[in-house]
Structure formats: structure tokens, C-alpha cells
Amino acid sequence: MGFSKEEISKSRRFWSSLWRGIKTVFVLFTMFLSFLLVSAPIFLAVADALLPSALLHRLSAPANLSSHLTNYDFRHSLIDIPLISIVRSAVILCVYGLCDGPKLSRGPYLMITMICSVSSLIYVSLKAAFVFGEPTNGDGGGSYFRAAEVAMFLCSSVLAIGHIVVAYRTSCRERRKLLVFKIDIEAVSACKNVHPRYQKILQQERLK
Image 1 (cartoon, one colour):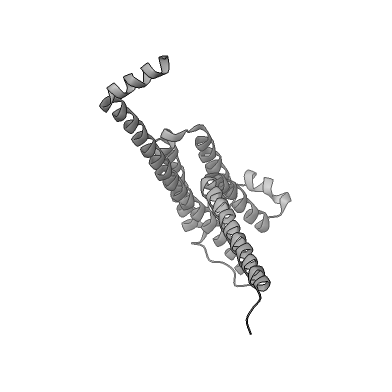
Image 2 (cartoon, one colour; image 1 turned 135 degrees about the vertical axis):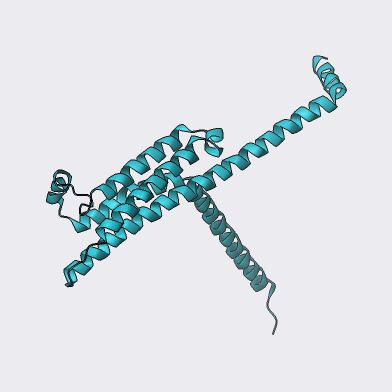
């Protein structure tokens, strides 16, 4: 039993609409992924400023935040971890906003990002050696507190490494853009140098 022409045309329209829908979803997903890649320094800086602060908020009551600043102790206080993340993200974000294409390719953006990230990694590693070098209580509350501390240190370290990776990828992307732009300029210049007579004929035709 064969299909009628109307059923065949309906089936074709259905599969054609389905294929167009799949292609539309794929294009939208590609555009969204490209937007995330281009805006990665901004999103990473915002995450760097918020995540360690949120973890500190879970560890300490809001009323005790001021006491952390007044009674600061390098071996026990954790307020400096989110402060370092906020300062690091603010500096990197300001440099990223002030730099253009050439400065993003090989300039202050990558260098300052690496300096801020590496220095904060060294500080966090030294602080972790002091904080986790002391024994903890064996009760459940002490285990939860220590797990939250580990999460805060890991979050700050991973975000610092993420800044370096994103800055390097941004530098490579801008370098490729400048290379393509340079090739286009050189091609136009070579065309003008190789065909001067053709350029003269074009100017003469425009004057007529």
C-alpha cells in the first residue's frame, strides 16, 4: 500500500521544518558559545569577585565580618582570601577594559593578568600551608568548617589559573585578528604596487 502525494508532501514539509529548526538551534547555540568566549574575561572576573565572598559568608556570620578585619591573624583569618579575589578581578577587569586590540594581543593585559594571578597563587599557597598545618577537631562541625575552607582556597586558586588561561586565549585570538588585518593591508598595498597602470586607468575613467 503506497502513500498518496499529499502524505508525501506533508512528510517532506515536516522533515524540512524539523531540519530548519535544528539548524536554527545550532546557530543560536554557536552564537551563545561565541558570546561566552568573547566575554569570558568579564564573566570570570565577576565569578572571582563573588564566589570566595559567598563561601566566606557561609563560614562566618554577617555580624562577625568586621571583627575579622580588626582581629586579623594570617594563620587563622580568612577575610583576605575574598579580598584578594576582589582586588585581582578588579585590576584585571580594568586593564581589559582599557586595552584595545594590539594591547590585548601582546601587551599589558596578559602581563598584568599573569602577575596578579601568580602573586595571588603564591599568597594563597603560603596561607594554606599555615591554615591547614594546624589540627582540627574531630566533630562534624569542624569537618564541615574545614571542607568549606578547602573549597574557598581551591576556588581562589582555580579562578587565578582561569584568569591566566582566559588571558592567553584572548591574546591569541587578538593576535590572529591582527595577523589577518595585516595580511589584508599587505595584499592591498601589493596590488597597488604591482598594478600602477591599472590604478591610473581607473582614475582616468572616474574623471570622465
